[in-house]
Image (tube, rainbow, N blue to C red):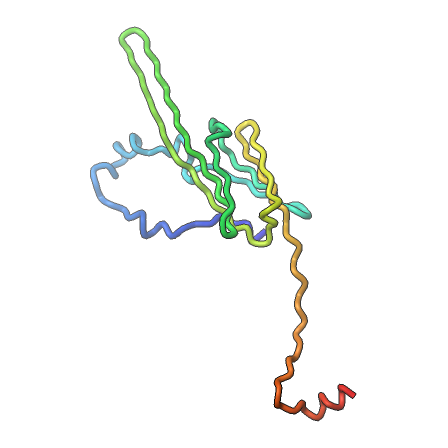
Length: 160
């Protein structure tokens, strides 16, 4: 279970707090998109079974064709691009709202059979089956003879 953990980039270099007018709590609510996609993009549950992990990602309101699921260099990437348009017209009142967003999470696939990964999307839940790879048998240490060097007496007698 310790191998299937979220992959995080070093965000400290990218996100530097800046004291600006838009950092004020009054303005922050206008620019904050966390109510639409959550603070981390989307929530994920991981459950371990005997021979596999089951990863469930909550993607409510996201169409199946907006989801990208890729495996590259031992990393599973789940991403989705969302677009929402809302418009209301009533007596003397016009309301329009547009939201565009990108959500992404990455997971390490150590000890997972990458070629056997399966996914299903139903009712806003992306379910990914991650079959465990069989552990490689432990290799036994063996001694390698070096040409030109005579074996020790103990080893020569043991070989007889």
